[in-house]
Length: 355
Image 1 (tube, rainbow, N blue to C red):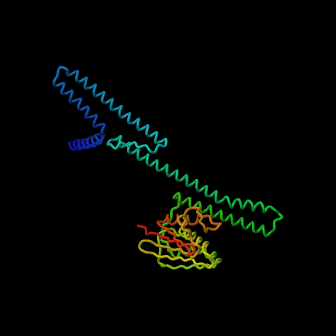
Image 2: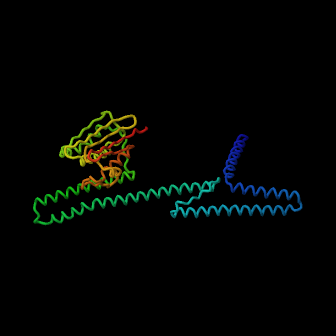
């Protein structure tokens, strides 16, 4: 029984100490307690000096204590009302409001927490606005890029209605419509992929990628166009080279770079791929001896829908932008150097990831 009482007394002391510590953090509580202590001390001294007026002093002290409690309660309600008003302003979109007072106490902590929530809401609102701008831009880009082939196909479809149209022209127009449809399909697919990357909806795999296998996978789709233009493909590198990444997505990035090289390299030209690995990164270098890129175009070639001086009429300006996003999304970096008439060189690095 004695032990139980001692334990309860100990718990009570701990709770009282903790409660007192928390309460006394409030500056207004400390001031309030000091005022009440001063009132009690003043009344006790006055009662000691004038004992005949003891009843009067008791009533006077009680009145002062009640008034002080009322004033304290009104002050706290006023603070709460001000916080409610601030919250309404924040809810209406005023993200610049700073409610902090940099003091101790529960109300100050509450103000600090409200400010933190305001900052988070502001960041979230800004992110939503950025996403909305990206979505608007994507829709605008898709509309702009699809408008031209659609107009062309509508004209050709009207011509195909003519029964007197020559069979050779009919075949030619049908073939052109098919080409335009394939181009639109590639364009829409690419834009959707880019939109997913912008939104962070694509999760790149982190598998061990053999660079030799990656190069072979990327080179296969361009072998026929290179054969038609009688271009040469040279591949050299360390067969043991590898990195952590996504084989399929990285292959798509390299395909876009290689297609760009094939397009801008003349008949009989050369495209080279070199790769290696060191302690810091795995690198892939793709170079050609084609037309090259002018200095004024060089800083913008990875911008979406950008078309330089030497770009072909059928180019959309999205392949290199996609390659850039894929490489950057896998802890990589891509740089380009070029000289008019001497060719272009893409330098890709995939940095080692700390496990």
